[in-house]
Length: 255
Image (tube, rainbow, N blue to C red; front, top):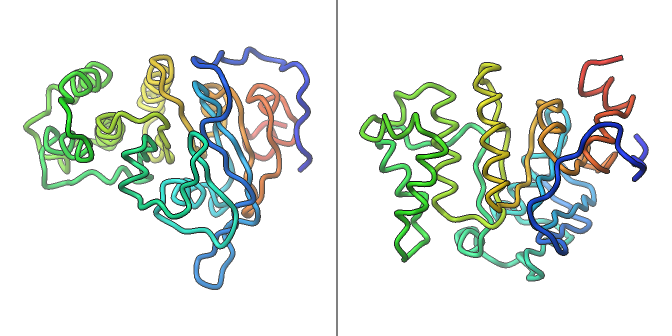
C-alpha cells in the first residue's frame, strides 16, 4: 500500500491535548523471533498529547513493536528514543519508571489477587503517595470501586480490561501503550473502553494504541500507521486513512 497523503481529512480529526515535538521516536526497528524476522525497519513517532494508533492484521508485528518499545524484546538494529533519550539498553522496569507503561494484550491481571491488590501492583515502581492516582483510576472505572475486595479472576472480560488499564494508570504513564484493549469484548463494552481512552488522553496522557478494531481505533486517534508483515505500509492523519479506499476494503470491511 502507498503512504497516505497529508491532505485535508474528509472527517473530523480529534485535536491532540498537548503540543510540541515527538515524545517517542522509533527508527528503522528490526526485531527477530529466533530465526524469524518480525519487524523489517519500522519507523514511527508519537507527539506529546496525541493518540497514535497502529493497525494491521494478526501477525503484522503490532504487539512486537510495543514489546520492543517497553523493553521486553531487544531489537537486532534500529533505535527507540523516549523524550530524546535512547532506550536500547534500559531494563523494562526502568522504562516504566521513566513513564512508558504498557497495558498488555490479554489483560494480564493477577487472577488470585484482589482488584485492590492488582491496583497496588501498578504502583510498584513508585515511592510517593499514589492515593490521588488511585482515586482517579476508580473514578474512570467505577465498576472497579464496587469490586475492590473481589479476586480479579472472577471479573468479566470487560472488567478485567478495565482493571488492566486502571493498573497501568497507577504507574503514572507519560506514554501509555495499549495493546488490543477491545479484544474479545462485547460491542457495548468496547464503546465504554474507547470513551475512557479519550478521557485518559484528554487528561494529558499520550497514547500509542495497537488495535484490530480499525474502525474504533481510527475514530479515536489523531494519526495512524498501518503495519503489514512487519513493515509500515501507510501512515497519516487517522481520518485520512479511514477515508482511504485501501484501508476501507482491507480493515473496515467497506467496498
